[in-house]
Amino acid sequence: MIQLLVLHGPNLNLFGRREPHIYGSTTLAEIDARLRQLAEELGVGLEIFQSNHEGALVDRLHERIDSVAGALVNPAGLTQHGVPLHDAIKAMPFPVIEVHMTNIAAREAWRAHSIIASAVRGTVQGLGWRSYTAALRALAEMAGETAANGPRS
Image: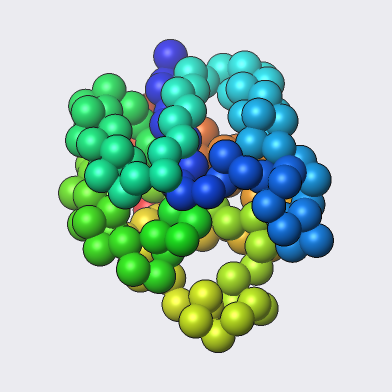
């Protein structure tokens, strides 16, 4: 079974409580439950990890470099300045998709630029919690194609 990794960055454990007028009322636990259910439907394994510390996210990528076929990453506040996370993502031999609940390009000007974007295969944003499920569907397809046919873009 193909294994995939989901990384949630700083403060995302506060989804549902933090600025619900921006992020909605869906909690991180609810997002994770939706992802687990979808992973089961797609026939893929899923590991989910959240940390408020960039090094912990980097460590998890390093630890899973040979055991997962792809990753979803919501870098949260690391989007604009997480150079170590960017570099770790670039080192991964599998596809990584950046995920954001909001459309960062439509928010404050300083949020619009993601340094993570140049390290990932693609970005899904602005769909609320559905950004995660849309990204998981795409990642599962990409990982499945890679497993069957070798690397593709």
